[in-house]
Image 1 (cartoon, rainbow, N blue to C red):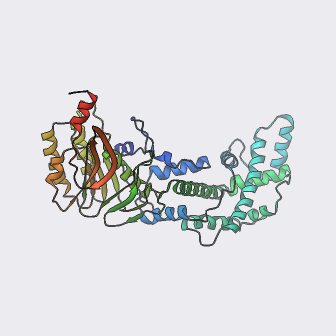
Image 2: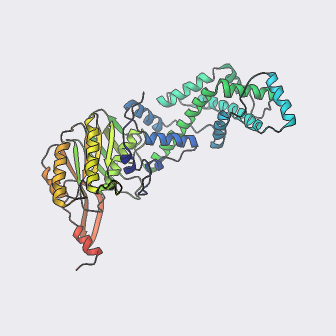
Image 3: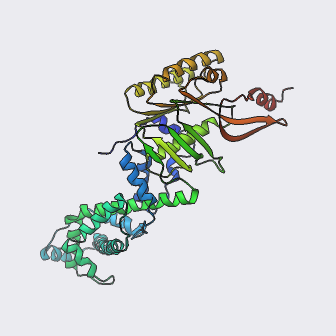
Length: 433
């Protein structure tokens, strides 16, 4: 049984896994360019339900990276009609000359619109098996595990006598009503579940081909490395929806807490989202917007980025932050390895309260060495308080005021930022002297 990564609704909103009220690009949009509707549905499932199972993740990666991926044996319209035909229940198939004769007599007196669906469905099923046989013969040896499982199903299907005989049928051949009814019984009754399994393989192929194409087109890493223990190391990561995004490197190899500093508008929140989005996609078994990625396989990911206050519940933003931290730490106490992101902790209160609360929370996080915490802050005193602590690493977003202009390179660097540009921005925008 597959093990899935845990993530709550707030995390899914923060990362754009589900469309959020702030209108950001949803992460599934990256890969929803499949050739088939069912392929799109499968891709969406992969992205919205990441795995916490290294062998299953690696199986997807290997299939996507395989250079021998064939083209789809049928186009979208044909596959859609096949789906419609298999689900068609207006006329339940049965077998025998009397059934055919009865229906044929009925059609003499009344037009039967279902006959078109059955006739075309039968012909498409025959074409489907003929195309699968060609594909099976042309596939390179030793395909990846996921593709091999599908080709094994094809081979088994082609050993069934009634299905093996389909290869001898010519494309332009006409069928009698009796033949149509017999094939309809074969496809929609006897072998319906088998055909469904083979179609699922087509959609898997569609997903893998699409993911590989996107990776090649955008320079994504197809084979990120996931391991049972250790830290994170991401090279050349960028936010997938930022045009001409700056590439950055980040690692968390010592300790369990990474603290990000930098001025407002320097890109801390976007950088956190870029890091976690790459890790999320790696757990989906999909290519990641980075040059290389190595991270532990996490059991859960929780974020607190676009956290709303609640007028309905009478909660302030500060109280919402406190309750969110309490919520994610409750999950961390359940065990397992969690990745937890806290963006701009306690921005809903005054500077002194925010400093003291941040220090207290950071001290608490040290008690969870099995979890990784990414924390952004504009409170430099809080970062400096833990500057020498072996469990904390520090990064900052580079920015400066030069020639009375705010310059932000969006480069991530190691250390603690000394940049203070808040007053300059206020003075500039409000035209203060």
